[in-house]
Image (cartoon, rainbow, N blue to C red; front, side, top):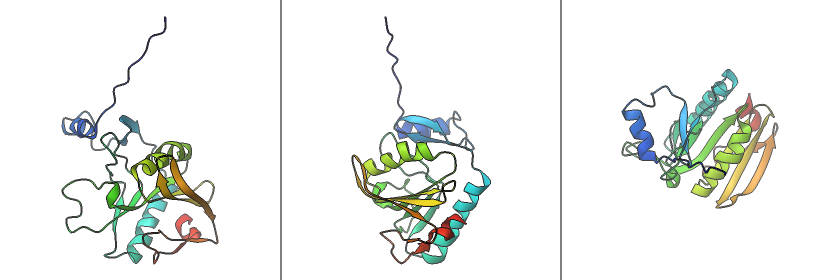
Length: 186
């Protein structure tokens, strides 16, 4: 006789409450993805360097045009609040003090991958597509490329491009922010 195991999915509110009462600590590297609390991979030095570089590059070009958010939550739904490496958000005077940004606030999400590439591509990118995030970049440090995902739908992104060194890219919402792939990777 097979036993069915029931999974208990958490809401964003329950997830936040776990932090408030100390079940989850401020330094726990976790995020809520489709109701499950997922432990994130440790951040290696190449990954951290790439995130810092993106923050610097975006900051140089986007003053007043977007808010650059580094490893902060985006509330995608009642059961998902991932923490992408970098997000570009629509400017808002309160800097989202009233609550985490939602899909309608996001111009671009960037995930930097070294070892977590399969998880990001198979779980997080489709999650962003279903939520309607207009564009995602996956910076693959191991492969030396940037994958650009655009035109979200319930089935995933309808446009996917892989760009390598010598090629240029810019977010669709911010075309003036044109970068060389090597600038992102180096």
